[in-house]
Length: 274
Image (cartoon, rainbow, N blue to C red; front, side, top):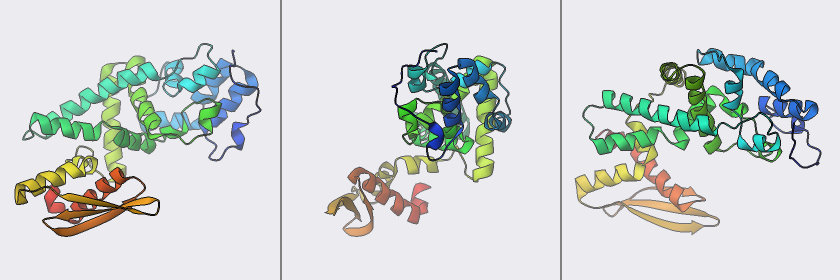
């Protein structure tokens, strides 16, 4: 196996929050064996539990392992290993088609524009990383030495969720991939007590637009956001028709504006229902 990492000593087991991914890394480093990498990963209790949770058992363990293999791992140990990127591409397309169909069936009074907005609220980094965390996929991502030292980003969590769906399609069929996806969402709804295909997702995704539509419809004016520096953060006040309605503080002015709009909408839930 070609190890293109540096000669610096690195023991993944010493890292905080030691996971299956760290265990696999250690096994590969010590044995220099791709086969050991597959065995350690696929035969783990965590992966067996995952397959049970999604109600699907992979026939091709190589495809299963590839679904969680980040490009940084491939860079260090490239022999016979491919990253999840192509599976992610496939899974993204399957997910998009599934969500589009479900929205079309569930919201027959929505215009094409509103359906597109709600789809964007569902098929995005934040929502998909939430599903990824729900399944515990964040602990399975096989990464290189440098990446393992860093906290897993929402972008990668989102990627591996899409990759998992793509892997089921490759291992079996598009039909099975759609069934797995549907099962995951139903399980998520049951355990989290949240409705996945909900208009409320749109409010949470883009609260400023929802608020703007409300103020234009009812007052013929736009909400105003006044930002001021408070030490190393931004305090943003929301004003509607000359009245201060809410405020929020965040290190990012953009995030604070989104937060203050969402806070106001959460306190006035009848707005988001209109």
